[in-house]
Image (tube, rainbow, N blue to C red):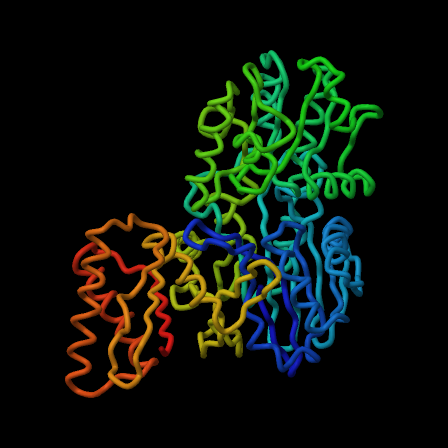
Amino acid sequence: MTVFEHKGKLLIVDCGVLFPEETQPGINVILPDFSSIRDRLQDIEAIVLTHGHEDHIGGVPYLLRERKDIPIIGSKLTLAFVTAKLEEHRITPRLIEVKEGQRRKAGPFDLEFLAVNHSIPDGLAVAIRTEAGLVLVTGDFKMDQFPLDNRLTDLPGFARLGEEGVDLFMTDSTNAEVPGFTVTEEDIRPAIDAVFRTAPRRIIVSSFASHVHRIQQVIDAAARHNRKVAFVGRSMVRNMGIAEKLGFLQVPKGLIVDVKAFDRMKDDKVVLICTGSQGEPMAALARMANREHVIKIGEGDTVLLASSLIPGNENSIYRVINGLTRWGANVVHKGNAKVHVSGHASAGELVYCYNIVKPKNVIPYHGEWRHLKANADLAIRTGIPEDQVLIVEDGVVVDLVDGLAKVTGRVAAELVFVHGMTVGGGGSEEALADRVQLANDGAVTILGILDTRTGLLTEPVEFIARGFVQDNEWIQGATKSIDDALRAANKVKIVNGAELEDIFTQSLTRWMQRKYRRIPVITSVVVDA
């Protein structure tokens, strides 16, 4: 999520989500931090969406909860995906549909939209003109010379803006470390055909629910090899229905069938397309791997993981692959076949863009720190002064004045967790830390009954432990540590209930750390006799 400000008005470009890592248990998604604009919601002129992937549109419902009438500007497919998502949140949006080549005003911002190709159709770059200068934001893009939809990235438009004078260029960094040019989507057709040609039984394809181009390749292969296709998973069914209805997905008549019909069809005549290519525990593929899905993987089935391996998801993905293999499936993935190409520009494409855009200032964006650094190095090698290439992180404020971009401050930009029906909250970081501690070290509840006259326990403490072995040796050691601490405290003064709870927690924590090198989550409860 990027916020532009000019003449007291705000323009937001993209509003996506992050997905949780294994170190963030219980988290559904992670939102941008809206706190820095929360008291300025009425100043927002519009939200511009570059394309329909979750990391660019997933946060929109949460922002519209705070002001429902913010106009949303985007292409036809992007707005359709956003609308379907907002229906789940019972929000009716104000939509403004645009397409490449169009210009539109949003307050003091003059917007021009340019076609870019990516792993989802209908992507747009946006040029933002103001009296302060011209900014070009690429969104996610690559320069596929043979795109499936014949919609090329508008390099002439990039060059034209370069001649006009781009003051700030914000460009996709995801593949900046990869040399050369990203190969075309067409290049994976032979590998997909090989899977369909050799698979003896069912084919289960897992992909992102928004990867329309990849699903198109699978549907084309199914048609060539006389197989019927069924979609599995709510988001996959919804998105592919939208894409077909709008003409972005071409499906031969009669090819799509209901998954319930598969029981009556020959195994070598069916293809299932489902979600779960990143090992998400609740997605269809993971439930198949765990034998928790109505579709039971069996000997001779072929599973095709037709997506990239997102950093941080490796363990989850390999866990799913192992589970599928255990039940007899042949799993085809990026590691053993050419079944995926990236949707992001590699180093050669980025350099090409720098040379035709000729920007005065550059902010590499969309990537981890190593990607941003690699992209910055490319920009510098094309002749852009090093002090005009800014590597910035979330929350950093950049001012563009008289053609010079400069870091001038910082705003709050914490991770905002969505867990269940709860969004953020002051204790979300602390709650997450507790969950991690519970997972690593377990929990202990200590119960004591206090004689308030003497400051002594009327009977030995009781322990309720979860997450580690509680044997007699542990109970004796824990009891002794608490008794020793209580005697020492009573030499100073007679303790009350609240003080005794602190003594329980602190003494057991010190003893557990010293004896077991573990610090469980400790809850102490003292009841007056």
